[in-house]
Image 1 (cartoon, rainbow, N blue to C red):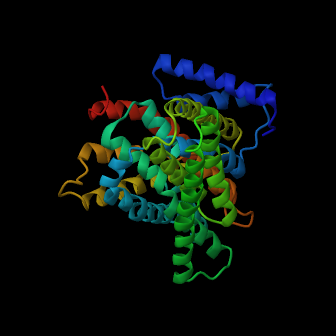
Image 2 (image 1 turned 180 degrees about the vertical axis):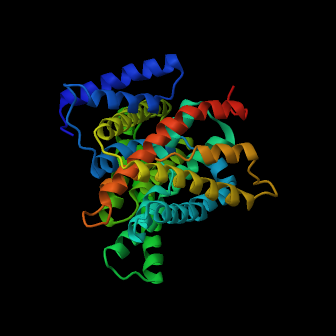
Image 3 (image 1 turned 120 degrees about the horizontal axis):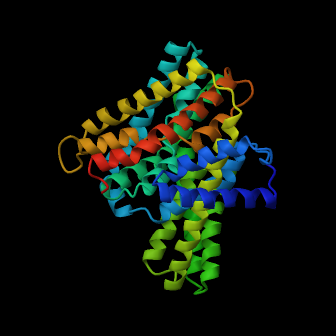
Length: 390
């Protein structure tokens, strides 16, 4: 995208108008933004847009992840961590494997292309999930489960995706290599986030200036992501860890009372802007895209089926005891497994030599569109039907 002041102002104006219209019509904000992006792309004054991996990952993703982690109910996450941990590991592997097999059997994609698509689409997307469930005013244990899963499953998916791309590229990958990559991506990401978050907290403890405190949280959000990306670990997990570290410091009074109010307002606005731009650009970029009809329909079907296969059997492992997940929560977890910006960023960043690269990218857009419109528009009625919202 041509990053000019005019383009930014136009996107922000559209986002503000869409936000007011969606609130009045009681429609999901994310669906309204994508629809607005599609409409904008058809107009003669539409800005030139190139949705890239770097734009999503480096500029727009850190504020969304940091804001979500900053206000995550960590005590509830700790109580439910066995369930969440199983969903973000076993659940992601099941989802990716079934998706890959489905695309190979239904669309006749070669295994390399099918497995790459399965790996990049397996994880739910924190941007879409958090936007949809917060917009629907979800709360309680369900919100903690779905938000935590979407935030933490990047680690498993990132390792699987890196391994698959390396194998398809002709590299020899052993079990030891996979374990080393797992430790580097997850452990390294958490370590980077912890170091940056702790450092920012130490500096925040030495000031009562709310503007400085906001600045330090901004450094924590982007600095953790950039550091992790530079050393080849998970920037997503780094930013989440930095957000959790800053949240803990905030609860201990490291950030002043006035600073806490200012930080909350700042990150709410930052998340609003990043969310708005991401969904608008998804709509603008997808408007002129040619979608292979059969492959797109097959992709939507197998991703939906694989989500069911990753939720219900996994939750059945906790059918007895305090960690039991109710049937209505399982249904919400299944239908709430939205895909979005993360999958698109991975697809857009695929090497040119990957087989069926164009088809993988197009089908990823189709799955994201179904998530935003098909699942996003029906999420509020589902939550109301199961009694999660009034």
